[in-house]
Image (cartoon, rainbow, N blue to C red):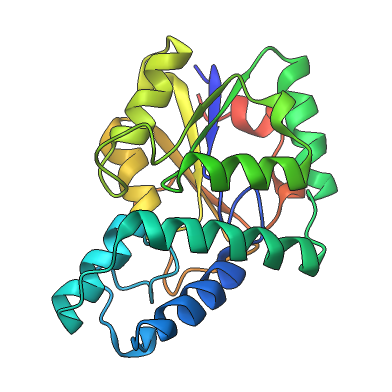
Length: 220
């Protein structure tokens, strides 16, 4: 039975993947690193990489150890400004879904590899924090996606077994994390279309108008 929906942040709740990639490229260029030349072990052109994974890839390929705290502060500052200037906002279809789920007693949570401050900033921009009873970020878990830690933590905070939670993800690493946690996963492709269909998902949707409580309840 579906009792909760756990949302990824970037590329799902907010159209921020390309903006984030632009910011990372600009900041890494300050260190003399061309991100386009750094292989992504996850095969997603660094679009879904956590800060930890990104900097580990840079160190392995370029031999450059970048201070993660310094880079995180710069990234948070520039990303917030980039999103504000782009005028990004919550999709009306997403708001409709969140209200629909709340009206049917379905808990909503967030599980993101981003750190706490960036997640808080994005929720502030979107104005949707009130819909989520649980928020797990990369600041709360030691291992990031594709490790299932974030989704396991979210399910535990919700007081639910993972099998009762639906995960909505846009990336391969995120989908792998949700599946490894024991959740069912829906692929979401509106903002960050995958190169190939995400394996193991119960369904793939192109936009928020394709999801409703009724459709989720039929997955049982």
